Image (tube, rainbow, N blue to C red; front, side):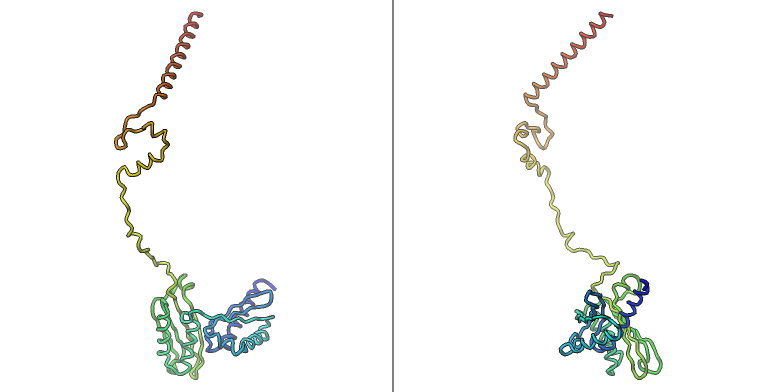
Length: 274
């Protein structure tokens, strides 16, 4: 099998499994699933806000799902794990399912949607957008939009920072499509700038003139300090040279005089020979 066909078939299998689980786990807070290949078989992780309904009494529901997935999709040794969604109010798929469930019970679509929107904003969302399409109250289909807060429409923030969920509801009048978009407050937009507090409150200590000079002299060896390089720190003092250095200077001068005398004698002898 070509590599391209293999990945296409894998994606189709994932979509079909998701549709099957969404239909079987109706009104159970189903928020999607993920497939993972393991040496022992295939692991299917179901994300839900109500794990008790998915697991069933003594795991009966999970066993039924495992057997049906194995038969319908020809998966060898499937294992189903249930994962609880930490904050279901910020999951778009769960909230779309809640709106559909409220409308199916007979509640007005405006009242059901506004209640869910307020709950999402209270949970800490930056913005919410709900689209309802279909024959809501009459025989004529229409499109209703409910918005609250701020939500990105394009660019990277719209792809990465916005959670999207879709749910379909079948009524006597027809099929309703519910689409929910949620942008959490934790997502940082590219144009947001945060200034750290307390940086400009720090005071810089002013250094006095001559501060640190005593410490410099304390670090010097005792021999250097005895020579008294500078008489006074504030005024550039005169340089004092020790007796040993004076003797060395006299020896250098005498040696230079001897060298000059030798050179003069050589020049005189050369002139006489010529």
